[in-house]
Image 1 (cartoon, one colour):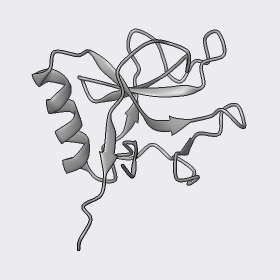
Image 2 (cartoon, helix red, strand yellow):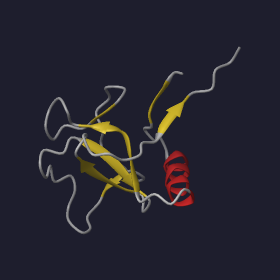
Image 3 (cartoon, helix red, strand yellow):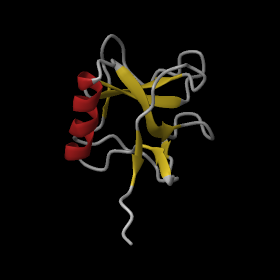
Length: 103
């Protein structure tokens, strides 16, 4: 199918995901950012280092993220538009993206 966990590349894409989470009544979902290979160094599923920016920010409430509580290595995006680290083994929904193919 050619899909992978979503990595919003701009504010418009991030807002689309957040609005979708609200529309389907989810509080959060996995996206394509993790620190599985090197604790504290987050990368995207494309292997590109992740650096928080003006539209993708770590949550500060109820506590500062990422906190690596119980060795959390995967990333979730909340319906409030903030990131948290979470256990990759957690059972939760994920947001995927697929690029348009042109024939």
